[in-house]
Image 1 (cartoon, one colour):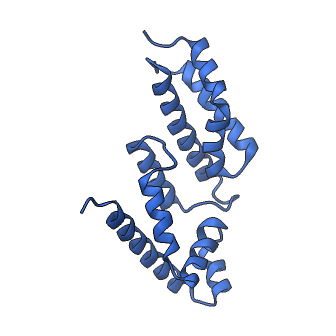
Image 2 (image 1 turned 60 degrees about the vertical axis):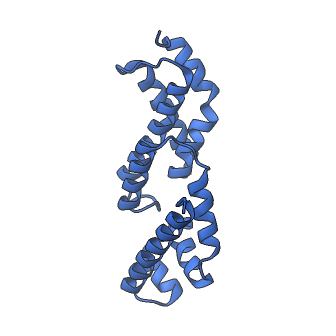
Length: 171
């Protein structure tokens, strides 16, 4: 028997911090993360969606929070320093295909691979993705051309992808 609206809301509000945090990690704005949580809660009881158990509800709510956060960023891409649209698309596809577990073998492998990245390449990744700087600014900071930064980032993406896949492969 599907969960009723009262039980759905009770479960969602019990998981409020976790769901808001999932959105906050993407939007980096506490007020927006709270708005996103409220939108997800509203959708859970107004849409033609039914949940048989708490696990299904929370899984749906986590993915919905992340998707809403990505949409929020896309709508405000000129106002915010966030991830590039192609990276947001990759994240969205990844969250659609997997359960929303922030930790696991893939993240551990990525951490290990990042530990092996040379200092100058790591600085490039930090400037671009952790500080959210545009490639033009990264290029100026590291004293390189914009195209060179794009190429180095692309090469780093490929290297990290290969490294993660090697660490996760059973052989």
